[in-house]
Length: 355
Image (cartoon, rainbow, N blue to C red; front, side):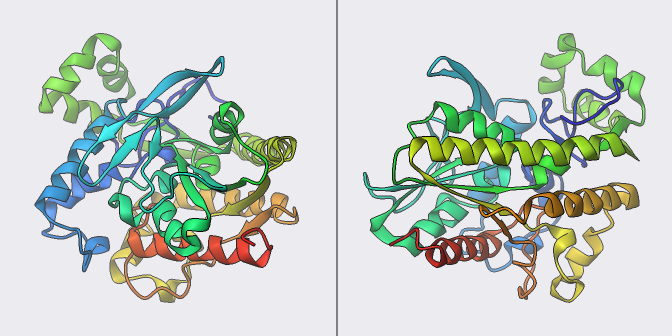
C-alpha cells in the first residue's frame, strides 16, 4: 500500500507465510495458528475457550490455507464497481455468505449497525458466536441488526469502497474499527533471499507451492522479512487515513446514516502490566524496527484524527485485561472481542445513537 520504493510491491505476513499481496498488517492470524498452534496442545489465547478442540483447530487450519493461497478474498462486481470481499465459506465454526461473516442472533430486519474493518473485524480466530459483531449484537438486542463487513487485509480505504456499493440507508449506523491496516504497510520490507523468493513467487510455480510442502516452505523461508523505516510512507499513511475518514463520513451523511470510527488497540498500545508472560515475550517478535515504526506511525495517525467528532480512541481498551488475548500484534480472542464490542456499544449509547 504505502511503500515509496519499487523493490517491494507486495506485503507479507511477518511470519513469512505468503499472503497474496495483502498489506502486512491485514493478514489474519491464520499463519500464527497454522505455524504455532500445532506446537502446543492449546495456544495461550485459547486457554479456557469453550469451543477449542480438534474440530475447531482443523477448520481454522483449512480456513488459514485459503487465506494463505489467496482464496480467502475475491473481487466482485457490485453496482458497477469492483470490490474485494471475503470468499464465501460454509463451516461449522466460520460462516461467510455474500462476503459477510455471519452475525449470530441478528434479526431478519430492522435498523442496522454496519461494522467495517479488516481481519480483526472478520475475526477468523474465533467461531461465529464470538466475533465482535456477534457479541455487539447480543449487547444491543433485537432492536438492531449488526452486519459484519470485515475483510481480511482491508484498510479504511477498502471499507469505504465496499460501503459505496452497499445500500446504506437513513437511520443506519456505520461503524469502522480501523488503524492497524493503515500503518502495517509503512515499514519498508524486503525479503532476505530475494532472488530465490522472486523465482518461486512467479505464477508458474503457484501450483507447485500449493502441492508441495517443501516448495512452499522454501518460498516462505526465502521471504524472511527485513525491515527499514520509510518516513515518506508514514506521511502518506497518515494523510490517507484522514482522507478515508473524510470519505466514509461524507458517504454516511449523504445516505442519512450516522458514522463513528474507532481507533483500535494493538499489542503495543497495552500497558505492560496487562500483558501475560507470553504476550510480553511476543512484543519483540517482529524486531525493534518494525515495532518502532508501527508505534510512531500509529501515534502520528492518532494525533491527526482524534480531534474529529466521529473518531474514538480505543488504544487503552485492553489495559484492564488479566488474561492472554493476543494471537499476534493485533488479532485477539473472544475476550478481546467482548471488550471491543462493549466499548463500541457504550460509545453508541453515550452518543444517543441506540435510542
